[in-house]
Length: 160
Image 1 (cartoon, rainbow, N blue to C red):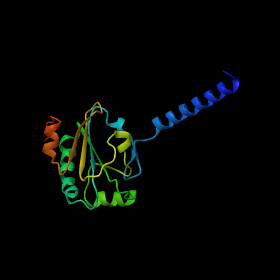
Image 2: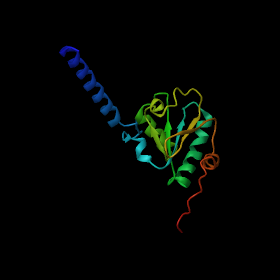
Image 3: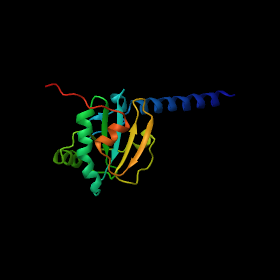
Image 4: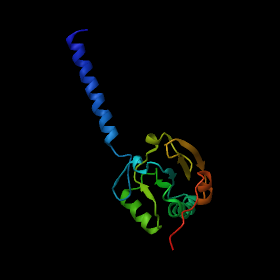
């Protein structure tokens, strides 16, 4: 192998290494408030990723259910809402305030990072185990009770 070939291989290897490092360091998402979100921050928790859209009536009904899931099981589960329609981050933040959404809304679509591919039915809910294995693809309106039962969660007792 000539010196020129070795030099090219080293350059290509270096570029691949840099790309890998940049990908590993980049956030998995940006929330509606502009903060970076990494799936690793929910380590040890179930992850419920809900795809919704502004035109979807069932999606609006599901907001209360996902809030309930967040309030009652927040120590064991994290809920992320994803709008794949390209809603602007500020509009999404206003929507979250107006609709009293208490879980994280992502301003980007992490479908590729999560391995769920293109989502074309709304609402769509993807459930990941604490080990980040995709364990359920659920379409249509889901209730907090259905999701909690699926994950075998028990509500947390509030201190009185």
